[in-house]
Image 1: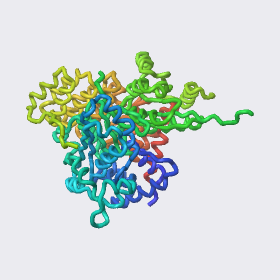
Image 2: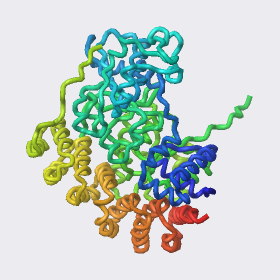
Image 3: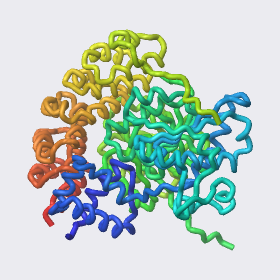
Image 4: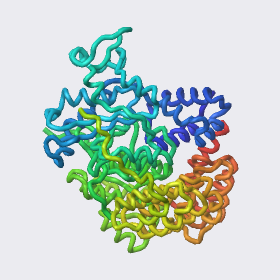
Length: 278
Length: 132
Length: 202
């Protein structure tokens, strides 16, 4: 099916407006192929038919489309620059307000099968000088109870561990059947895994006083109203001055005006302002 | 030895929620030799100015999620390397009060829509110190 | 590392009327919590309307708008609409964003909005056509453009047509380009819109 330049432009403008994703001219082939795939996959007989479907988000087409444009694999130490930002910038800012021994609360939501919250714990132990000076609580939450069950079991294959050094695997994991590895029992017991729905306000108001939230690669899939509500819920769960990190293709510009954009050497993150201004 | 280095192109951030306006400005500015990036509202504009170095930001007033005034105020209260970025504000309003408000928020200059290409380029050159 | 979840927060267990009362609180956090607890409660619209009108803190205004969106009926649209006329650009931005989330509830208001005496309101209202069915959006925006003197309002309508316009828009767009041939930007906008719309037929 031939897609005209004007049709691709219409599509790209829609995608940019909705998600913030944009592509250089040189990526034209990349876009064309994926667009053709989606037209075929939805059984659309023309670009126009597909575009109408897309605009109404019929059959969660936006989610399928975004998935075809992003790589969404979960593994340990994914988006490492944010973990580095945590230990080189964010935690220093956060603990400035805290006494030694105080509690630091970090939330990984959605946590999927646990790679992210365990990565946070591992990274802290391996990279943060002050890890023993504070009482660190890490909560991992997801809407999917099967994922949570797997997270609690903590068993992973080679692909999930591909970014970890042999040394770290050797010290924190033990081999189990099927060529897999299970993360240390102490670490498994140190993460609190819970089920939560980001757009259920009553559910979310039970989560309080977080210093840092990782909410990566989920908000981009929500519709406008749900993104807005989830952001408001997350704001409420953060302490004033607390930080939230989104996924690499995500931006608060497409989600909510509640947060302040904050620049650090390793990442752009978002902050709940310390105080209200009129 | 004479300095034969070509001056790097001045980099402009165009901020407007209308894709047609962004296309129009970008085409005019690129033809005039500027490098152009875009943003759709004040939040994306903040992300861009904090991630990359620009010589000028051209910002619309009416944008969803974060309007041009709020963006300007946020820009002017940022870290020094970013806070002094020249800003050309573009609005549908032509009243004295709106122009005054723009100055107070931190705009270096103010134009009223619809802006002609030549007018845009001329002001961009003046605000970036590029040759006219 | 211990497993404490943190003290329970939220407003569960409080009645709607006590939450509506809390919208008056001198404490911003209480007003924030109250607004969030009232989301979806249609009887709270009048109280939210009053509270919104005097709310000085942007994030609390945002929560009140969200509560109204989640109620999402004609009454909540009527509360939000006047804010399109605000002198404050951030309030206008918040109002437009809220109304964009209510395509069904705003539909009956589109014709009056697009023929409002205030050109700023007409301009903002064009954006609301973006979430409509292509044929309906095209009809409404062409009707607007054919009677519109203000170039910026036309420009805004053309921008929406660039995304959603059907070939039915082509005659209106041609006439618009002719009317505004001497105005900056408009001829360019029309030509892009027409090529995007015609691109459907290749």
